[in-house]
Amino acid sequence: MVYQLSSYYESVQLIEDFYCYIWQGRGNNCNSCLFANVLRGERPHVIIDPGHVTNELREACFDYLVKAMERDGFKVDDIGLIINTHSHPDHCQANEMVIQKSQAWVTLSEEEDEFRSTLGEKLCSMLGIKAPRFTPLFYLKEGNLNLGAQNKVELQIFLTPGHSPGSICLYWADNKILITGDVVFYGSIGRTDFPSGSLSMLKRSIDRLSQLDVEYLVPGHSTEFGSIVKGRPNVERNFQAVKLFL
Image (cartoon, rainbow, N blue to C red; front, side, top):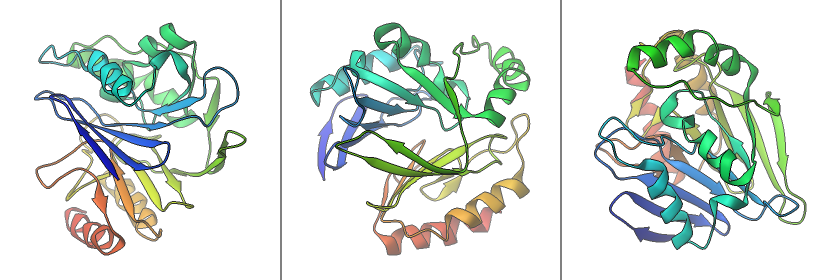
């Protein structure tokens, strides 16, 4: 595991060609993940949740992400696919910037895309934020998602509503890595008071995830307790702790 620190992102290389960019700024923004060199062709990288362009404190989130990636030797121009765990703007506002630079494809669940174009737009309006504009190439469904050829990555997609109606989590069984978006954090859970949030649905989603064999739980945001939960015993204790909220 390799760490690099900056004032706005902590870059964590969990394993070869898999990087987590942990947001360190004062304002709201999500953590991002990068699968490097997995796709065929000239744009081989896959990013999960590129985050805000600029947040409520006017921190230039996307510019800082670009710089953090460049320190690791990667260019946003070489991203071929954007995966969104859900459509809240702090996770997908920067989709447009990535697409402008690389013509990347975008994917999320169909349930979340329907929410994005209805209640999601009203939520953005309430927050005074421009609703993200992008067109998914395909929709994510429960089951396996295979990335790449030579450096093949096989992910399991879980539909995990509760924080939002079409949230997804990604499980990389080969390396026991679980990417949870805003479903579960270190010592906490995602909010359910947004439009179409549901505590009962979030409970069912977390119950499902807690059955997986996980060594690294990578959440969409850090908390006062930390960011990535490392080690199976710690992951299990974290699930036990967060279920007290449900």
